[in-house]
Each structure stands twice: as structure tokens, then as C-alpha cells.
Image 1 (cartoon, rainbow, N blue to C red):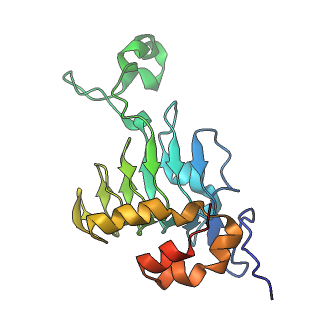
Image 2: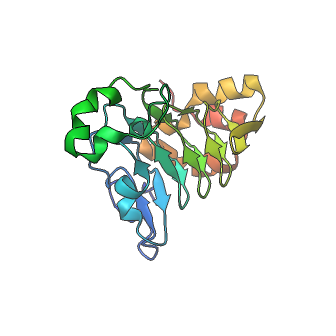
Length: 214
């Protein structure tokens, strides 16, 4: 019997679990890019991800999420639009409140911008994780429940806490290099389908042996 890949274009990959949505077919904002099969799980309304979970996103920076990422309930991305001035006596954004205060909107231009927020491939973000602007989370990383990620996370790093700290890496440095070289998430979908068991439970050597040739 031929192996049949899952469909990356369906909104609800688990028809009996409407709390789970694939993000790629959901998002409409040109400022958000999501790879295939990355999903968000929320018992309330996972389809409101763009407005409830991506906050202060006025651009031009992007939120980029790789393939095969798992986002638990309450994961939130704080974008650069949340910044306030901190170089004067008050941090309050008076010009945004309207009236004659709006004449001073120049006071809000040029605020620090850390650039795009980038989540690698095969990243697991636990429940109620908050990711701050401009953070880059490496491939294969695990972000513990309730973490506030204020700084970059290395490939295959495990972090937790507020602010999140590196607990350990999932593999030794040479093995991480091998995993990045294999980059299974970039394999053709049919090939991934044939080797799901190796991807989930095999050794690095098994993964390397399963990699497509050429």
C-alpha cells in the first residue's frame, strides 16, 4: 500500500479536534510567514491566532515560523510595535491617544526595532510562552511552559524561565551539526512520509541513512 502524505493545506488536520489548526492555511497577514504543518492548539478559538497571539504587529518587521512547529495554548509573540520611549521622564505614548497630542507623533518614530522574529523548524513552544521582539529561536529547540524568551535560543536548545535561560542542549555540538546538515524538514513530503518512524524515534545515523540521495 503506498504511503499517503498528510495534507498541509487543511485548516483542521484532526477533524474531531477543532482546537488544532495548521497556521499556514490560516494566516492572511503579509507580515506573517509560516511553514507547512506548524500548528497552534487552543480550546477557545485557535483561528484568532493572528489577533490574539501576535500582538502590536504594525510592521514592517515580520514573524517567521518554520515548518513542523508545535505551538501550545497561549503562545504569544510581542512585536516591535509594543516599544515605548524610555529616554525621557515618561514612557506613556501620548501621541497615540489623539487630539492635539497626535501632533507629536514624531516622538514615536525611530523607536528601537530588533527586526524580524524568527522561529526555526521543528520547534516546540510550551503553554503560555511569550516571545519578545526580534528573538531568533533555532531549529529543534524546546521552549518550556510559561517561559519569557528575551534572547536568541540556539539550535536544539532547551530553555525555560522568566527570562528564559538555556537549561541544556538536546544533543552535543557535533551531533547538532549533523542534524542541521540532514535538515529532514526540507525533505520532499513523500520522503518524510516514508520515514516518519525514523524522524520520530531513530538515531542520527538512521536519519542520515534515510536522507534522500541527490
